[in-house]
Image (cartoon, rainbow over all chains, first blue to last red; front, side, top):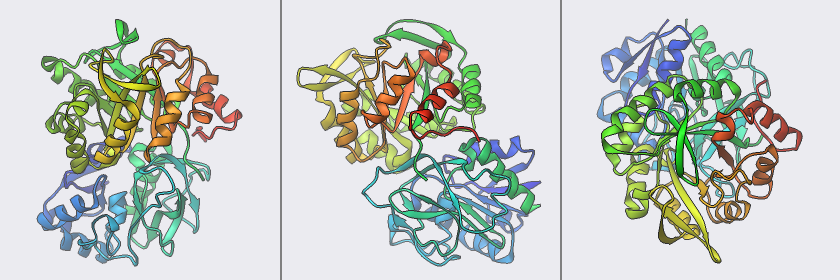
Length: 200
Length: 254
């Protein structure tokens, strides 16, 4: 299936692309607004600073086409910053606005633990999840972040590092994960495969 | 739910082939990086580190090609470095497929390199590699592949590097490296207690008990080794089973 990856220069775009190709999908990278408007399925990877993603969305005029496509029901998968940008804003760059498609904000994880939250952690399902279908409850996923959605209202699955935070979101056509499925071995590949199936 | 302790194989390369030596000298060929990467990915390694220990300018394109070929084999994070002197060097390594960049000598000489990389790629992508050697009551930061002392205190430098934007520390004990006499517990515990970021312990690993010790007493978040994995003295899977049976949380395949 054809899947459009928003390429704003994030470091993990090539590995996301490779992971999708291994699953037999046809990823297509773009930073053109018109390609986003026409996309059948959208994937927003992201790693690094929140501001870099939000500024790129605005500078490349991708904010409106992306938000419109998601509102229209185009299947969307956000990874790491691609999850965080769905909220109203982030403490990492308070002056910038997120996409505001989900209620709440992104906050810093507490300084009582080592940050970034870096490495393999388990998640706990709070609701039925199609994205996590067929995945062992004890499976580990690779995380690399210092900020997170601490409001668990919309969480499909949570993780904990100093505080509980949203690890997986699944709402209608909106799917998002705080971890990096493209770096999470077999369990990560299963998440991507589930998304491809749901988007088809 | 808690963070697993990571096991990280390291490929020291001359840009193209994996090499190994004791205390950073006497190098010999230890295999093809791409084949080893594929094996470690399948065996349950949590990450992979690839270093260009020759780091000569004219062999740079060869090393970048090695990163590209290694990255294509992996469904786990890849850290690359060796000879990273500028932001542009870091960009080339990330573009070739690395998730994280390690900096060492050039950062000691110019700490702004850490901040520049951190601003562009985020702290999670910047690994400060520190080669430390016991010098009386403290540890000296060694540079140029562990050969020269920078006359800097390792604990102070680790703190400074984190303040500059490093998101992780790869701590190698020059005293233990290649000796297979166990990780440097005192050094690792001292650095781990001094910084707020994860610490990867390196140098001296041989037996599974060394790993238990560095996680329990050294407060390491991850442990790195090279030759014991390359030579199949120790399988990653068996090591993780040993750690799990000793109450150390690790990621085992479900």
